[in-house]
Length: 381
Image (cartoon, rainbow, N blue to C red; front, side, top):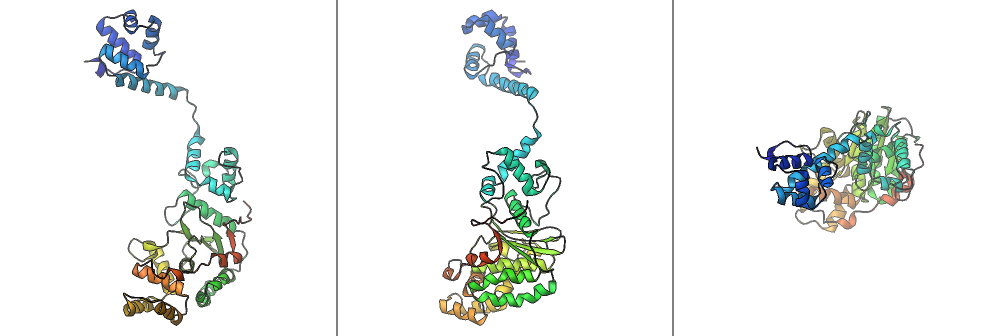
């Protein structure tokens, strides 16, 4: 069997075998290489590493590929390093936290009390407070965390961080006791607010009177969150929204979507976390869960009844004029932007009537407990 096929653990062992096969002494190799015999002794005894330059020289002398010497050296170095390495159980935790959470953004938003991400000691302490745990290992965005926040779909660490911020704010809110009857009775009142962007500012108070905690938290850049529904103590519903799309149609669709989750009791066992709630995820196809399908149907019907929208499209397709849009919006007593949004969804023509998609964020924010856009909600962590 050739030396290349022998199981060697170190490059020194391979060198010694090559010497033995040729009946060479260490002094012989030293003379060939033009180095001292002590150098060869260190190489054979694995006291001196074989680098790339030496591996090439040895290849010339023995005809053994340089890669074999370097591979043995690499494996030997790694084995030696493992013998002296000190295990650090926290290293994997820090890798997950620093690699997956948008820490710089959370610090900037005032969620974490730390100077910057390099302030590792304070960052870790702030994360423990933020997630309400006793140890960093128990932070719920970690795969091995003992306690897990139940969510309706797989959630990214950024999305879970956003959800925790909503929870921090909602738990300290004061609202009336929740009444399903009151919330359902409020739907016609909400419907009357859809005629103008300015009326959206009345939504937070109306929900509070029904016992729904309504919170606005600006999304984190990588979260792409639209809204969430969950319950406090199984008796107090919470609706969180991000208003990441500042459009009247999106606001009312997401709001009514989350209200339907509340009315159907969704979110008691697992928070109904809604991300990217547009396009296919705003539909009712087989890829959409039963709970989300029900919420989507309710939101679509609330914004523009399907029968009315289908009849309008049948009459006017493929040409829709501004006059037709405004006139139909008046008939169904809604803002043209809400109709435009539903028409875009139905026809796939998102380039039409964009000028009617009025902004509502600045109207809503002064009337709601919010976090983001330069505001930091004062909460006890």
